[in-house]
Length: 302
Length: 302
Image 1: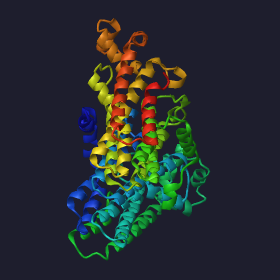
Image 2 (image 1 turned 90 degrees about the horizontal axis):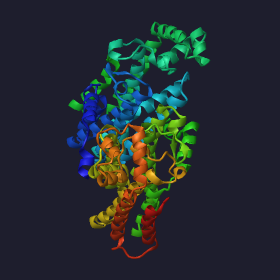
Image 3 (image 1 turned 45 degrees about the vertical axis):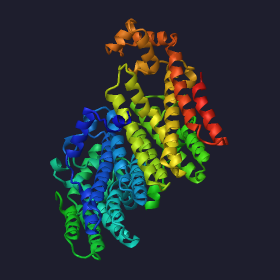
Image 4 (image 1 turned 180 degrees about the horizontal axis):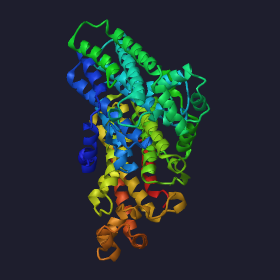
């Protein structure tokens, strides 16, 4: 009876999971796990398990996110939410959380498990903050907290936990943590830039969608700092982010301003710090690939 | 920044959590943890952490359950779902999952963490089964699988993990596991009986609500086995559980039949096996309390 309860999945669920896991995405997080762990000589089997755990956790949060945002498209494909009931979507996310926790626990490392649980807490708390408190806030500090919680925390965990698996000392673990953190921050900043000026088909959602939901990301913050007298900026600051016409005009202003380049420069500074973190390590195929990966974060889709 | 992301919660969330955690419930699972661990001489601090982890996990699944069932009342109080958006409800559940995982990881026991993750998987998979496949099924085997996943798995984990914390050998761990399993199975059977004939104010939801949703529990299964020619049973067997009038009539028939007593006898048999599992242990205050708790499961609200 127990065996069946553990392994028996349902056709609908299996199809949904296939779609979710095959739909693509760049698999950046497990790639970081495999490369960072490979560079440090960790057990490849454990790294594969860890990479899968990280990707499952990421996918679980995406599934619940899509329900929360009522998103109908993700990566250009219909979301579960678009096709399923909220009930099925909630449970599919929970199922992925459970599998992620099972995979993470298979690595037999208590410190890693703690980090895993802590990171899940940071991600969910960040989403709660976004839901309750962060609409229309024009603040770099707030923005950095948000993108750490949303993205960089899991990148950080990916690199850090790979170094835990290979049994590194705390100093080395912290160096890897910095690499993951900086790459994650850059990744989210570039994502937020793409929301303004990416190829709409590639981004897979309408341009300017963050601002239309009251989420003020780095390009809008830079723009607001540079043009405080812009009437649309004033309206945004007054909390009128639900004025769609005004926000669409603001999106156009930001797109044609140098706030875009300023944001990319900020992302580039994060990548520089990520590359610095790799300097102490001897040259290896994996180290070069981590460097390439960090640089690719800046170039993708732009 | 990180510290804030970890510890900063929101007023709305805090109020919701206060309500959830103060709303009562019987705290049966942490009670089992504390008593079983106490009987075995485990570290009390670890037991408190474990008990909190188990109750958080339980509460997380209740929060998502209420969203899934679109329930407006739980324990006679409005659910989060009744007052909040689905988004806030999903994230509050996720927040509790994260906290549960953090607490469980604080116990520094890899095997326990694995059991924890596995149990979460069993619970979620059981809910998915219920969602996709189990409506209108009249089968004892199916019923036992469902109540194991839904309830007994976490009771089992509560007692088993308490014995892990105290460092017992596998045979003793298995004895505790049996105690938790049997008490959990009895608990759910009694719950399912109460759905037919409990005091409506205490149960906190309309009588017969399971059958009205197509969930065929033990009293209905016994009744269907005993009266296969009852026209309402035939309709149910044909999948017409959405015929409300017919199901309400069937609820009344079951209430006045001896299927209720037969179900309680079945629960009593589980409790007998739970008490047998305690026999090898020397007499102690905790052992007596575990015996009382098992007997109380049978008596509550009837």
